[in-house]
Length: 140
Image (cartoon, rainbow, N blue to C red):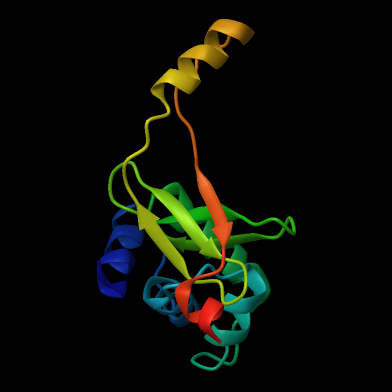
């Protein structure tokens, strides 16, 4: 998808399209690594100096509601965001450079059925995020 598509979806769902919101959308949509709200703010301010941090948080919230981005939970507890994957995908995250790679395929059915049986929960969905070092960071 492109930033224009994201902005159109925001507009079609009743959100005003401003230069500030456009700067946030461009940064997040084009990033291939997970970005914290403060990183988005710092990068987007280069495109739109009058940007406020509240606008960044609100825009990220709206993009997440529309399933255009997804929240990434990092080991240090800080939440970051990345463009949403397509279908049911999981994440590999580099702990050094922040690069995110989506992957498919998990055989968690046996595990989730076992957990459901042991706990009495009816499990409806799951997230899987794996952390490590990408090939570039390992070789440098």
